[in-house]
Amino acid sequence: MSMCVLPKRVTIANALLNALIKLPVHYIAVYADRSSLICRCLLLFPYFVICGCWCCNCSMGETLSGGSVRDRLTATTFFACLIVALSSWFIGGYTSALVNVPQNLIIQWIREIQCARITDHRPPLNDTQSDVVVWCSVVPANETFLHLRGNERLAAVWSMIGCAVMLGVSLGSLATNYLVEGLGLRRTLLLYNVLEILGSIAAGCSVTTRSYELFIIGRFIFGLGNGCVVLCGVYVAELSTNKHRGALNALATASFSAGMLVANIMGLPPILGNPDTWQHMCWIALLPSLLFIAAYHFLPESPRWLCRKTPDTGKLEKELQRLRGRQNVDADIRVLHQEVESARKLSSQKLSLLDVLRDEFLRKILGICLLAMFAQRFTGYSAVFVYSTEMFRQCGLTQALASYGTIILTAVCAVVALFSSPLQDMVGRRPMLLGGLVGCALCTAAMVIFTVLTKYAVCSACQYGTLLAMALFMVSYALGPASAPFLFTAEMFGMNSRQAASALGYLVNVALATLITAVFPVMQAYLIEWTFTIFTGITLILAVFLSRLLIETKGKSFLEIQKTLEDRFGAGAKASQEPALSQCSDLRKC
Image (cartoon, rainbow, N blue to C red):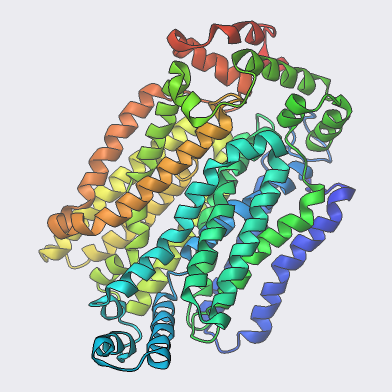
């Protein structure tokens, strides 16, 4: 039985990773005596997920101790992809969900700050009497809607807290194309992680300074740094081999759900979800970025960037030897040079967003990738996740059980996504995406049917059918739609346009998620139990279109993918690419 053996240069960083994982477990075991058994189990759950995920991905291919020389997954590659995933997708999911469970505590904290400002710095005259009533009146701590009702400023502040991260991510991702060109992927990721650290510190200090404005600013700065999620897929794709590229990219995007799961668990009242400790969740967000900085020296640079920017082939050869785990990398260097020459004939510089939109061939490929993004969001995942607690309550569960139900749903999504990541390279991206979309459509249809039967008392046990349909929906979503659209965007574009296309794809994804989350309550008010029929219909329509347009990228090199796309959409392809692609008769052997 083979084991994942780490190179000597990675031993120190791996020891640090183990320490950062085990210290929270030790903290839980020693200091969590007041928590219930279920809370302890939930806290230990992410640790076992990470360990199991390591073993699962080590088994994807041959390891350093033997097996196929060209296709094995080295510990250096996996370690680099894991570190970047933790400091981008994982921490992005954690920070996005950080305000979900302790929502009432944060709103009450904002009211206390504003109440103190009114009473300490303004005399309670007629013009401020209404403010005192609005901000200082006693409201049940667990009734969020009473806090926000009649207090437009508080509602606006809470909306800004929720949108600050997404706004920051959107703006931060726009700069990636220009920063990578000058700094390279590795140093650009370092810059973004520094911004994440600054944002987390600002958010953590907001409680001490009693400033909810600083909390909003901190989340915005963090969002700017978390724009590196756009680069994560590019970095993973350019480091990994053709055989493991899909699984590693799926693992990275799946860590977003794992981050949300950890945040929801940490926000439970027996753990950190109480008035004295909820702010500690902001400081926990520092750990992945600090881990990235500690491991920065061990992370390899993108071979493609080195091939484009550095005349020193010795450095390129050294990095490839680390990544491939073998001394002879001449074939890999030859393929890289061919890809670089092909990109240079197309354009001598990186293409901007506008350049991608102007080019007919790239515009077609972008349209397919954006169609996959639309399909992912119109499965209804955003609505199911954001409003799952209320949906559980409609099924007859208490508030406490509904909260735990939401955490269980997140756990199902995270576990299935993490452990099914090797299927992207075994089954293929296309069948995983299309199968997942059809599964999501069937599950949303089942949710509608069971909800209608429950409402009209046709079936007393049908409410449990709704819960089962929601769980199966999460499984279907995690198998393909959760990661495949990002993977296609990272694979279907050439070297010059990859960053720009990834940034635009992520922007569209964020915009769709925000739109669906905002519009869903309005849809629910008019359509009531029939709301999810909209998602069912749109998902099936988009799945049909994607089945006709998508190509399979499993196991193919970037040059092979480009040639396949040119053959299929050749009318608008650049003829200048053809000589470079034709230099190698069999791209698999290059």
